[in-house]
Image 1 (cartoon, rainbow over the protein chains, first blue to last red):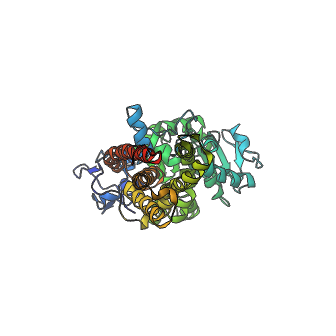
Image 2 (spheres, rainbow over the protein chains, first blue to last red; image 1 turned 120 degrees about the vertical axis):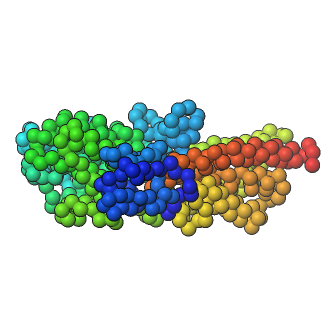
Image 3 (tube, one colour; image 1 turned 180 degrees about the vertical axis):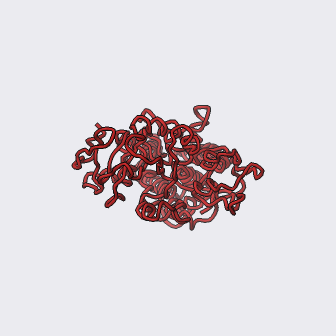
Length: 99
Length: 355
């Protein structure tokens, strides 16, 4: 299954990439492919912007604005101002239907 | 309180850093019941936790593997259930009762908590090696290279699903490409639909109250018979829209055209509403205004509800959701206003003030 086309913020900077392959390991949607020397993006539209690749790249070769693709969280953020918020962290009093 | 949630029949076992609770690898009836309740009741799920810390499965020693998980009890249970026949340590992070993937997104399953927990559990004394296995879906919250720098422990990302752990552990800690992919099959979607339907029912009760008032309200006062007779078809349309967005659209997701969830919901809600309005003869729905109201309001409601499912899926992105909302929200508000105007027109016609 694929979500919306051409929307994600994922960027790869090949000049910093050493081809270590950590991003291939953590990506749950096979967005990257590599040959041991370098890595490239092969399927951008599958990216869910979870941020795993950016977090685990020791060479700062990947940039993405991470977030959770959850409408309830984005709407909560619009109402409350600030970043998208699932109602599920902390407090425990919330009954939002997200994770 | 959390520790009594599961049966510590195993008692505790000795480790180099004191006693560690031993957990069974088999589920009790209570564990299975707990899983079911998690899928049905939000309040239960949000408080279904395990005490953060270190646990033993089997009889681990200083050379045994260390597996890290969240303190949402269902996550912990799914992990320990796969460890029959293995001797391993389980380190539970404090994720405030949230599962690994969501907690990683929030950063509670994260670098700082992992480093803190490695120290607090005295892991460097319990094992002699310096490797820890994290679920792959913990990666959005963890910077493996920082953890290594600060604790000496190197992070291995294991498979996405706990059920692949036995194969992973036997294969010399190698995950196949298949183990690295997150799935979202029919069964998984089916398991998540109650969590869409149940919260939506609250809104549905308000809707039913409004329908009762609207159709019961006559010039003579509130008439129960009128409410039932004219309101029932509209209530049924509402139920159809609810199921379209919270059940049918999520369940048949890959087979419904469009990538946008709002459009998928609009299509399912539109087909259901259209079929009911035009194919089922109901006296109350003879009014053109009420027909128009139904055709505007219910597909929009189905669309909005389907959009909420984005948060439960494994393949949506925040940029995509923002795009959907940017286009969708103004349209939902417009649909709401138009629907309200049509209802007023219907009521005026109904009362015979003006035809």
